[in-house]
Length: 495
Image (cartoon, rainbow, N blue to C red; front, side, top):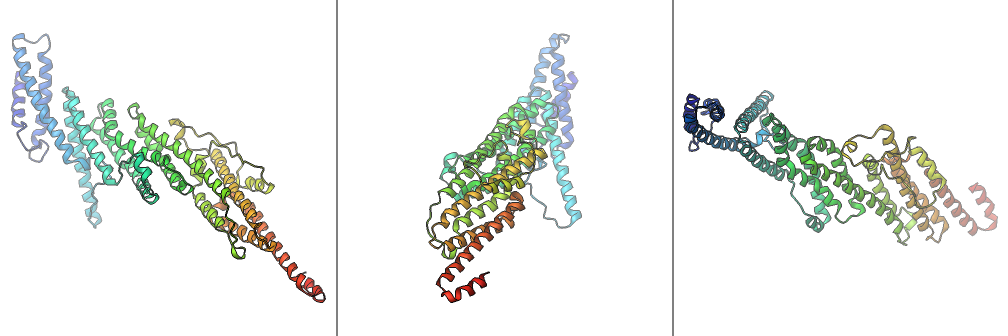
């Protein structure tokens, strides 16, 4: 043991803190294994001299000598760990989205360059793991973990900043004009999948490799390195949902809901530990808040249709601006069928007033036969489980009925506006033009898949009926102004 201490002393003194070169550089790599072996020998020597069987006379001096050398060696390894993490920060994450891309055009050269980068990453990771294992086995795990967490957290925070995501408070979001907030939301939609599926996933794998020998250290390091950044990302959708709502914001709310829902399996798997439970909870809170706002926004949209009180007559009975606005809105909304199905999966549709018979005929065609929709659970196990085919069909049917209801609300409003025309024929023309516009928008979009062919056929028949009524009344007015001797000729022509 004395000989081991003497041999270790030579290596440790050779690589004191005053030496600028790194043990793991090209010039020092030959000594790196000797140095790590020396630290292991020093630790074994300390254990030997603390044993009761050791010679009491030699035990004290040798123990102090070994402890002093081991402390110096650990300071050097702590410095080496800092150097390694600093020098190889970006290449350590195997999925780092900000790693510089190769500009080499030749396929063979590009492949060779990529292989070199991967090899360098593997070597750096192996070096860090060797240092970490040496420090932890010697009882310096606290110092090792502290350096690792500090350096990797700094890297993650800087990566998030370079991705373009900035931390915003509720008051800042409330002050944004809509265009500015929309830009921030689109930035988040672009960066969040990259952060969770590349940046955080890469940190998970790096922790697994460096601290393969300790589940608790691996979990602790990953949690502390990524927790703050992940929580900031997942808090943003909830902050947006808490801002002033409007029907126009609904589509970005649905985009946010869809993005968080798609990321949920990754979040649940990656942050599955008790130490990262707050991240899972934040994801669930954001989904619940977005769901609430989406439902309220759609209700606000319906109320806005019903509140429309414009009395201006459209020249020639043309398509009303309300019709254009509502149908363009619904066409866009139809692109979010699955997201809406998830949002309304556990909320049965209850129309506030009796519905006409034709509505139920349309709903029956649009709604696939199935059992009632399954409730959307907020528990981690159920929220990651995809809808079964039957429940998915039922949820889609529920959306079909809601869309049909909104179109019915619009048509009822158009009936009221048609009464403003003094000429009854013009009121029929107004209804014919507007219903025909509605049908055309349905046929040209995904609304047709939601409302069904029978709905389209019935409303096309309504448009033709109104057009025929307009024509009949127009001819009747003409006939009333024609002398009696030409009335028969007009009647025959009309027939």
